[in-house]
Image 1 (cartoon, rainbow, N blue to C red):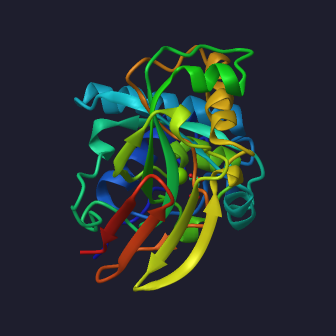
Image 2 (image 1 turned 180 degrees about the horizontal axis):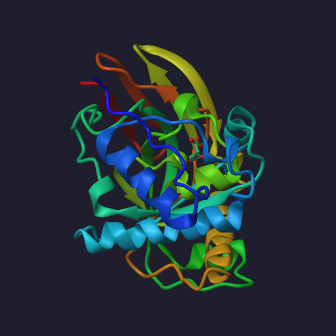
Length: 269
Ligand code: 0L1
Ligand code: MG
């Protein structure tokens, strides 16, 4: 029998019990209904508390914090998920997918893939008040990438509080073959074609991400400042899905072709 999702403890859900349930669902590949079905008070701030508690648990079990990801920075993603503002979540080394490896089906529930512009930070970036120009000045290199998102919620159905708690549907991510200095390309114009099984199914440019991915980076720094954090030198920043995500079941083959940042190939194993 498949393991079952947990029910609310006596007295109702709490930050601690939701955090534990989400990490268990992730580790045991269990999908569940969103907590806000039962506990509508789970708002964005509470979701972030849960996210931070689970970051500490990830660190306690030996994972290393390597950066942040933004979620829902493009209209395509916001419309699909029904959450109409961006948010920030944590990346650990356990989420790195080495180039050429298949989608880790044995670790994920219902993986989907989305193309992203990825930054490696040269300098520390601390909000509040960070602008696009200041954010881009702190970037060492720009990469194409693909995020393999997964959600612990059945059918990816969630509200902002649910998805913030769930580390913004983190799963795994892979970076492409080409790293450029930010001065070498216009990120708003950088295009991506998403290919599934040999057919182009979607496309976007970097402008889809908050008008310019540097805006997303500034947003992350400013948002994290209100949570008591900065973006550290050396960190990786995923700026958010440029297009809607595509399903990646076993047997699938997906490629994200960037204009200047090369192609990222992924297969469903
Ligand atoms: O499940 C989701 O789509 C929420 C995470 C969004 C990830 C992104 O926009 O990059
Ligand atoms: Mg993403």
